[in-house]
Image 1 (cartoon, rainbow, N blue to C red):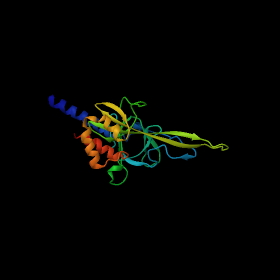
Image 2 (tube, rainbow, N blue to C red):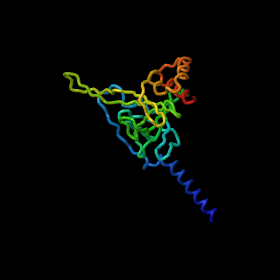
Image 3 (cartoon, helix red, strand yellow):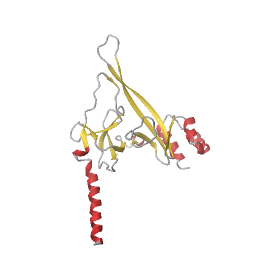
Image 4 (tube, rainbow, N blue to C red):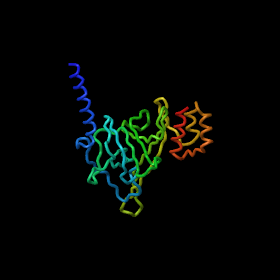
Length: 225
């Protein structure tokens, strides 16, 4: 009897895993969405205007089993993917927990990883995405947002839409999120317990605080101390 129960349990687990793997290819797990169209546009509402390959993980643990063509809408804070065999833009029914955009090529600097679920951030929702620049006991996050601004010149019958972009940075330390600037003074104020070691690292590596990759490496180094 015990052997039968173990087999039954194993079968249930296997079925659950197979169902999870299949979820992203079932129609019930995504829906067609019609992206908002803008007239006389300058710029783009997206992180990049082109579809780019990437991986997705949903809040229920389901992951994409192959690369999806993704677009991240910074105005609506929404991830879209392109349906295979068509140009239809699709949105996920189950919320996305994290995703990675990996442009073609071997340059890892171009790979961008995003995650949702952060708390205690002003204007944040459970589905707000943050780019993870450093991931460890201390995390360094970047948040990009865009707002559509319509303008109309005097005497003109048409309006022009431009997208105003803002970028903010955050450090997550012991579960507490603090907004910082991408400069030495702001970062070291939060990481003051290892200031001497960080000062040496900054000097030795000539850290450019306007370079996200270098900022990420600085916090990676802090996480080794």
